[in-house]
Length: 294
Ligand code: NAP
Image (cartoon, rainbow, N blue to C red):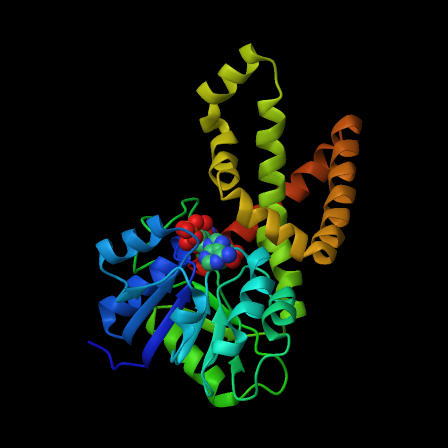
């Protein structure tokens, strides 16, 4: 059993990510007490039943009171209202963190008029599945995955170090990055692939029925990999696109240009161009496997 890192931890939102973090902290004794808030009583009851919460409340202020660490684990579109609600109840010296998939908007929404003595250390564990809710979590989710911390300039170094240590104890590799840079990187590595998957699956959904049946039947040809990504939570993804608009639109523009170029090569029968492009993609896949991110 590891050492207790935080006497009292408050989790706001207890879905896939929040409950995975709670499970890990409970399993390894990283928190003395885990207090949980969610939108519904049902999720709070489940958290108690599954044993990773020590106390629960529908009132977020009740949950964050006396907490040494508060981690917001709800969709990023809820952050501004949550930040506004809890800021008066946060303990002096507490660390306020999160797990949101975008970071500039988080610094804006959670950092707004934060009381003196509360340390904002936003985090993004780059790990997940297409499943949601408190039952979907598991303690090994963050193993061998990256967790990116984006403390705003001037953040207490000790608070950042403590969050680094927490995520390392959850099995992650940790990197500290500027929030704007994080959002640009994620626009390419995560947000664009999801947008493409939503589009492909959407196109299939609009096909006439007879063709649609064949798409499902023969999905192992490639389509099924997109359906897994496109099955991700719609609320979470709506909020990501609305909160990382600029970076996503920029990368989408580049992608559209590249797609048009590829379209032209196919039309013109430029086999060499296609072959070169596909050879380069293959090398990227090898890089992902070597980096143990496959
Ligand atoms: P999830 O499974 O859908 O769970 C969301 C949780 O937030 C639920 O417990 C929900 O309560 C709660 N919630 C919603 N609105 C709330 C509010 N106003 N106040 C308090 N709680 C509220 O979501 P998730 O996949 O864990 O994602 C959570 C966060 O992690 C998101 O910000 C997402 O961007 C980030 N993230 C997700 C992934 C991923 O792959 N899923 C990966 C990395 C980061 P109820 O249960 O009562 O509805």
